[in-house]
Figure (cartoon, chains in turn orange, green):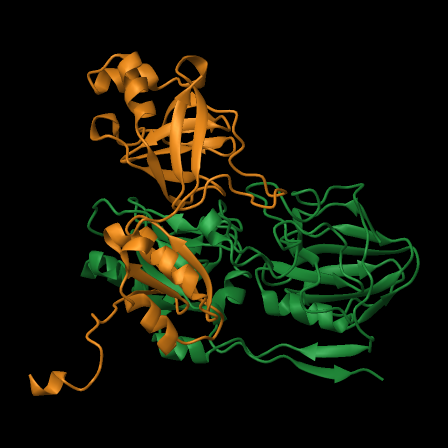
Length: 216
Length: 303
């Protein structure tokens, strides 16, 4: 034990995998949002961007920057309980479920062994957390989808999914900010504007925010 | 001021991009070779971050009603001026009032950058004047230039000298240097041998979002992979085994295994690959990659 009593704090060494020579992919599991919040609050000058994703973070170093002791320390800093309860904004998003707005809803409900009404009730009864944004600017991956509502992506993507479409993809529910091709099951549509580059806060939802859907 | 008499295939207003917004799903974007745009800006007395034009594969015909001071960097295109004066690359060009600059096709490479004294005065959106074509914002109305468009210039930032620039010497032609990617362990020997041992051709369905490659399929263990953050230069391998190198306007997260990442110093070479060309990959260590930061341009004052 003698070698360990050198006065160094006992912190688990941080591991990452390189993505190019500027990206550090850190496995963060269920602590992704908490670590993300902690890193943001550390204001690391060598870091250009932090991308939260599904169980990992990608830290992007500024050009030619090295992994500084500050970055290493921030990656292994203990997360306190207050940080873990990420204080996101709460949003209510009004959804027109089914019909032309949600063409995949009947098939999805049938597969789940539920009535359409029960599927909607279940989808709207849950509070979701924005895990991360990706795919399109402002596209939220919302976690918390009850397992019975989960469904693997469509075998063939739709050529055109309308802006505002509320959809199911694997363990996530999400909202398409803009029209375009998409492989998720569309169950409804909202008039909420998810992304507007001209707004001071372009993305309506950011990682850590909470979302509830309200049937129109 | 520029009047677009004929648009090129894809002429985009670009500056150095909008880093720091990837958590919103917005890539950094910006000029595919930021150093080349910065040099063009310096040749006309602009700040490095002024907005210019990124021109790919087939160029525009542009008129300068009040004349102007311009510079071209990047791939050399077949080009002419209505005055009959030569179109030099990497050098300050003084254009007479009413002069027309025509850019046709690149002699080699794919993209060039045109800077104008004062910079292109398009509105800044999310901290940048760069066009983000996938979502249609930034630059000139969020789109590529069209015939009839008029672009105005801003106020020049600095004193101007007539300069000539010499680009850094390209160290390794024909291959892209990569750092092993986070999922390299999912690829078997056959897949790795294909990826590192055989050439890949750039597919026509390539753009600033990504370069699609075609060649020996890169086999790998298929398994669900959670979405992870990715960067320009990340090489993803979808189930069909044909690699995709993510580009400047590519998504910020991806769900395919990443076998490798093109190093920052070689992204300018990625910008010059055009459909039909072949690429090979060669590995380099992270530390060595960092030391290969962009080569230095040299500048000389013209008499």
